[in-house]
Length: 316
Ligand SMILES: [Zn+2]
Image (cartoon, rainbow, N blue to C red; front, side, top):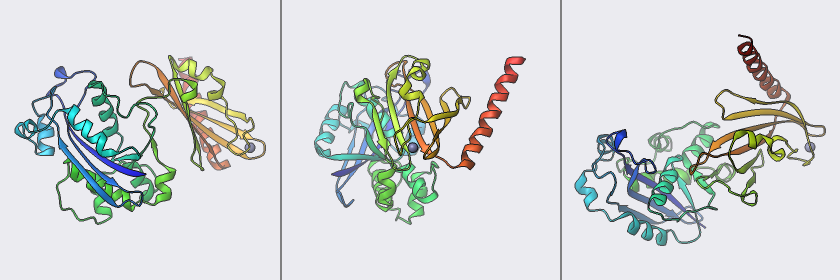
């Protein structure tokens, strides 16, 4: 299997009034580096795309990328570049990008052009920005690509914010990450979230499990489903007892509960309610993890505080 480390540059409207709702940004450059299974660089891809929607460069984009309209005039149309890119990728690869937005915008641009490359079922990818901070700091901290390049003392031969150069830098960072981190904390591309129960995703990450549900019309419907509301012990798969929860953290998206397996101890579960990209529906991602008594206590304090606050609100 190869790795395709991808970076995109895009243009955006000059102001919100010109924004096309299903195309917030238009891709103007694709850069990618192909690595073999040992992460040796074996090929590169670099192409400019001539925009058809936002033809005038947004000043911020102009400043960051140093592009001018004449550069983009020399680009090929999106369909041609994507067709070449698909052939170049081959058929056995996993994508890696810096952050989460490149893949989302690639999907949006593909949808705009009615192209289904990267359609449903391609879930696994590497968010190298997330993996970098997990590997070096032990937690998710959104760092810039240049910070990561500096961290590893990678030689800065080229400017940042050109697609191929950023793809090269990203690939260099990716090579230096510990493989066990990369393979434990890979990401899921959920632009095409599961539609049917048979498409639902379950992953055992060893230290925790993740479940992605199909979509529902409302949050209420999500919580009505037993499989989501209840938690089985990740160790013995037996039913657990809920100690407290599900309580929301206030933004209407995140919910936490603590459970107990009589044999294996306390378990924390978090549900996140996500909006789909295609309609007004919602789907859930649920994480299940063993915790120690101290963490259980800490969550309980949080829960009691929130409960107190909502009760006070009700009174007043
Ligand atoms: Zn158990």
